[in-house]
Each structure stands twice: as C-alpha cells, then as structure tokens.
Amino acid sequence: MQGRRAGVVSRVMADAIDLAIVLATLVGVYVAVAATRFLLHPRQFTWPEPSSLNLITLGWLLLVAYLAIGWANTGRTFGKTILGLRVVGRDGDRLSLARALGRALVCAALPIGLFWCVVSAKNASIADLLARSCVVYDWEPRLPVVS
Amino acid sequence: MGTPDHPRGHMDQQHAAPTDPSNVVPLRVAGELPLPLEELVEQALRIALGLVTLSADALSEVVAKTLGGQAPAEPGGAGGSAASLPLLAGAAMGLAVGVARWGARATTTVIRTGEIVFSPVTTSVPFRDGMRRLGAKLGALDARWREERPREEDAAQAFVRLLVPQIAEAVLDQVDLNAIVAERVDVDRVVEGVDLDAVVARVDLDAVVARVDLDRILERVDLGAVVDRIPLDDVVARIDVDDIVARVDLERVVDRIDVDAVAAKLDIEAVVRRLDLAAIAREVVDELDLPEIIRESMGSMTGETVGGIRVQSMNADRAISSLVDRLLRRSQADPDAETPD
Image (tube, rainbow over all chains, first blue to last red):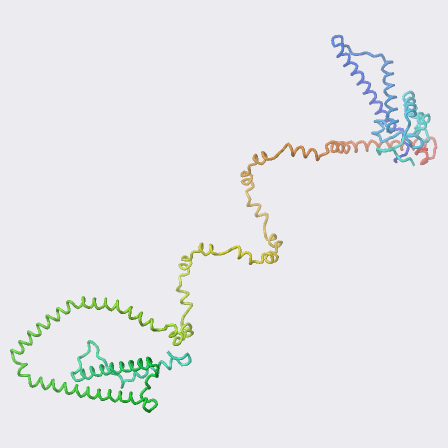
C-alpha cells in the first residue's frame, strides 16, 4: 500500500488531529497573552476577551502557516505523520513552499473540499486538483518512490 | 668345620676318636667314692703324661711353623727319617706309662707294708693323742682357711678379670677373625638356618620408628631436586581432568558451603570504600546512549498503537472507496486511480 493514494477516512483523521493541534496552539497563545498581561499589570489583570473575528482570523492564520510549513518541509504535518500520510506532487516530489502555501490556503478556506476525494476516482480533493498534488500512504520516514 | 659338601661327616670324624670308650680316661668328680690309692696314683700320672704330650705336640707345631717348615707328620703316615722322631717320642711315652703304673703299684705296696709295720706305733695311745692334737691343729688351720677363702677368691677373681681381657686382646690381635670366618664359616648355611620371619616378628617396629628422627631426615632431603626429577608434564598428561570433574558432586559441595557465614566474613564496606563509584557511574553513563534508549522505548510503545490506527483507517478508506465505486457503478482496482500520475 506504500505510495498509493489515501482515502477519505485517513485524511479526515489526520486533518482532525491537525485541527486539534492548531486549536491547542490557539489556547496556548491566549494563555500566553493573559500571562503577559498579568505580569505587566497584575492589579488591573482581567482575562483577555478577544472578538470572535480576531480569534477566527488568528486561528485561520495559524492553520495556514502550520499546514504550509509542514507540507513544504517534509510533506506532512503531525496528523499526517501519525496516520502515515504524505502530501506530494503528482510526480512524487515534495511540494514547493508556494504550492504548499496555496494548497494550505485552499484547504483552510474550503475545508469541505476534502470530501471531494470520496467521489473522485483518484482520491483527489479540491485542493489537490488546484495544487496538482496528491496524498499517499507513506509510513516510512523518507519520501516514497512513486510507482 | 668342613667343606659345605660334607660338613656334618667331617665333624663326626673329628669327634669320633675322643668318644671311643677304650681311649677314655675316666675322670672322677666330687661326690663319687674315693679311688683306691693305686688307681689314684696311676690316674695322676696319666694326666701328667697327657699334659706333657699335648704340650709337646703344640710346642713342636709352633716351632715348625716359626721355622717355615711342615708340621711333623702323624704317626703311621709316611715312613722314613721324617717319622722317626715322633716314633721315638711315642715309645718314650709308652715306657713312661709303664713305669708310672709300676711305680704306683710299688708305692701302694710300700704304703700298705708301712701301715702293717708301724701299726703298733700308730695304734698306741700317745701316737693317737699326737695324731688327735695334730688333727685339731689341722682343723683349726682348715677353719682359718675356710674363713679367709672368700677374700682370697675375690682377689684371685679380680686379678683374673684384669688379666683375661688383656690376654684376649693380645690373642685377637694375632688372629684374623675375618679370614677365619671366610674360611671356616658357611655363611649361606647359617643364613638358611635363621628364621627371618621370627626375627622380624620379634622386632618392635613401632619402637624403631619412634627412634627415627624424621625431621632430621627431611632436612637432608632436597625436595627441589626430587621434584625436578619428576616428569610433571607426563603425569599431567595422564590425568583425565574431565573424569575427575565428573566424579565431583558439586551440588553436595555447594550444599556444604555456609553462604551466610561467608557473607558475614566479607567486609563489604571496605570493598565499597575502595571503589570509585563516581568514576564507575560516569563510565556507565558514557557507555549508555540514554536518548537512543528512550527513543527506542517510546517508539516501540507508540509504534503498535499508530500502526493499528493506520491499518484500520486504511481498511476504512478501502471500504468507503469500494462502496462509492459500487454506488457510482465505477470499475474498481484501477491502478492509476490510486497512484500519483
């Protein structure tokens, strides 16, 4: 199964892990901001109350950066590492930073596009179609030799 | 002693002549009845003549050996001038014996005649009184002699005790006992007659061993030289060590060891004090690659969990994919559909 295109279940689980990590990171940022405010103004300390727009924007930016860095670096994020998946180009090469960033923007903007892989004959999501990429099973720590 | 071939016969021949009854002069000993006067005189003369004869023979033999010649021949041997001297001597002795016998008879006759002639005198009262007084004086002298006899005998014995060793030493100086033993003693026959078993049985070996100073003997033994002469390599080569070890019941040996007592004798604190525990710990930590060990242990723990998740998700992917393919009436197992372009 090494090198074959992954199905929707594996990809959803990997993305769910990645989303959880981003949310945990967002909570960490909130705690860090609160701690900083406490250290600067202990007497006037109150819990920060950011607006929903700011939170969503911050979370969205964190998600795009997290996905783009992971795909451009090793082809996988932490969630895909656990599920043994890797994002590669159609020729099997690692994505460039620009393609990874573009794929991350599409995924973050249209998460539901992931489910296109259910009906896609090549298990390709909307982001895969736009970025000309694919997600394959790859449990080895190196890049797979695409057959 | 004779030769080993006929020792007994030779001795019998030598002893046969003195045991011939016709040649024996009967000797009277104390306690027997006194001899008649005639026989007493004759026997005294015979003894004197016998002594003279033996002395003459010995003297003539010594003189002959001293002069380097042969001893005089026995009577009845080869004739001639060589035998004339002993013949004359024997004739002189025979004549002397006859004269002595005749003289004894004459003396006896004279004494008895005198007794008859002088019987009136000897039976008279004065003579008897005189004889009685003489007997009393002689009895007193005899009593005095009997009284002093032990002292005289002691003096004589002391003199003999001093004289005999000197005489014996002088005689032994002149005699070569070794030559005599070699010539006349049949050592083999003597040894055959000795019951060595009985001799050994009478030997107190414990006493003999007790008198042996083993320490002095051992001090004189050069153990180094003895060991050097032993071919240890050959000895060791002949020892079957495997066989010896197989005979040892190690379990019994171990059971007899009091491990608690051995442990109690150990000064573990002293051993620990001599150890450089810090250096040992540093060396052990240097040898261990702790990060790698932790990494491997964590990897092995999470590996199975992750592997299980991956397999189950992959099976789910295939199930959904096949379901969708059936719903869309799409052919399955398109290799290109699952591999990158």
